[in-house]
Image (cartoon, rainbow, N blue to C red; front, side, top):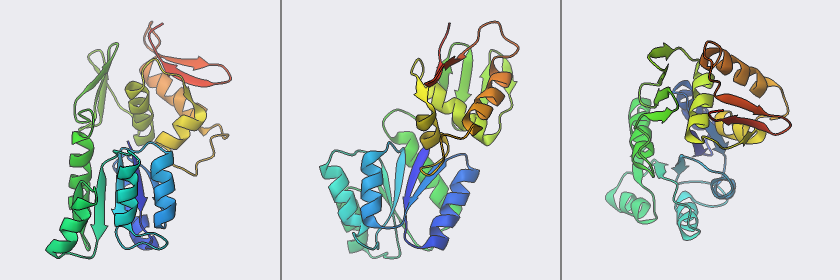
Length: 223
């Protein structure tokens, strides 16, 4: 799952990014409101964490503009302001939740999971494809009755495949969704990780599920 953090304080942004990546989220950072507005509109995110006090364009204005443009991505406001009027203003702007600074990362993570889970499709529900089963809550994966042990990046890659079955995913799409906004999709690291995943998912099975589309990318399909 991919999250955009719009936060101008570098230490706070780094802290949030590191913590979320340890929980297997892919994280992009925007350092001001204008950049956050552009990235949230131009890319597909599962959640946006939006600081309210931002340079160039404040967070509430960014949220209102995103909603006016039809962007329905869940948004969690982060701010040092904690009076009732500020909270109401944040929610009225179109945000889905509000968390005041300073906060415990455990509370932030709980709110992130709750928002992602209730947005659009039920992100907490198990995902099935062929004889693969993936549990987004526990991050466990099975093929048939066999549980498969995956690293964080392998898990993120497989989840992206399973949420996009029968769809050709280019290296750029994979890089932006599973890694981050600045990742160089022309390196061979994506091919390396797809190969790692294949060894665990397909190697011992007659029916192969991960297929290469030469010169384009990869697809998860039954063939």
